[in-house]
Length: 104
Image (cartoon, rainbow, N blue to C red; front, side, top):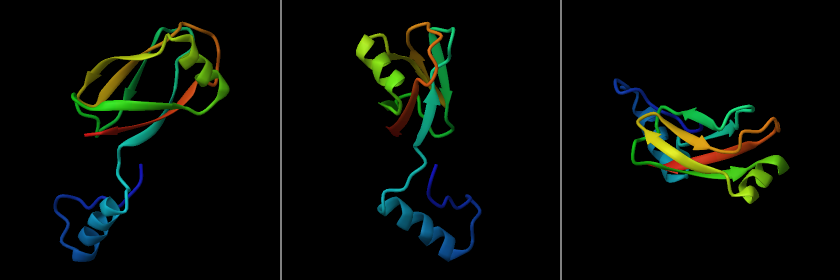
């Protein structure tokens, strides 16, 4: 996560302005990384800012993750407030790591 996030009770004007400037400069707290679970067909990602209507965009960060996409077995199977679930091949293959971002 990146950017300055002032608390709801923030009274320091500089911190509030810095948070707004960060948003205009493209920083936001809607990104992360996830490694698919081995020996399981699903992986749940928890993220405080993820909304039930948000749509995650996954980008493979390793060759094994790219192969998972190429197999056609990877998809987002559930979305909820604060989390989403990825369904994938039940494999012992490691390093199936993805970066993700989302709007909303």
